[in-house]
Image (cartoon, rainbow, N blue to C red; front, side, top):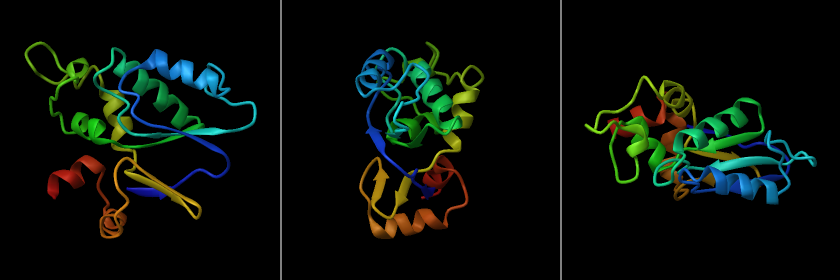
Length: 156
């Protein structure tokens, strides 16, 4: 659950909360093309809370998943992604639940599979990235985990 952070210059983005259009505007301002590539080779690191609250959570998550799969970005999970993985309905997570409150697992299987494969922290010698605090004993415990984040959190 702790992985190596990308080398080279990075742009770090947090708390998008389903605001896909605002994310696109930010990336354009930072010099990224619509395909997520930067002419100077910069890459993105998303620091959790990509979903919930805003109108385009699924679109945002799928866009970031594509960037991660193409090696243009990394993601650390935030509490909103963990809630999604744990199928916990929270204010703002209506995109993932039907009107009766049931999780739309089949509809969002690709998102769940992507999130399950993501770390809670990233590091390199000069930089550490996590959604919340970097606490030595907690990071040491994460290094020992072999399960995905949702399973590990459910156990503790």
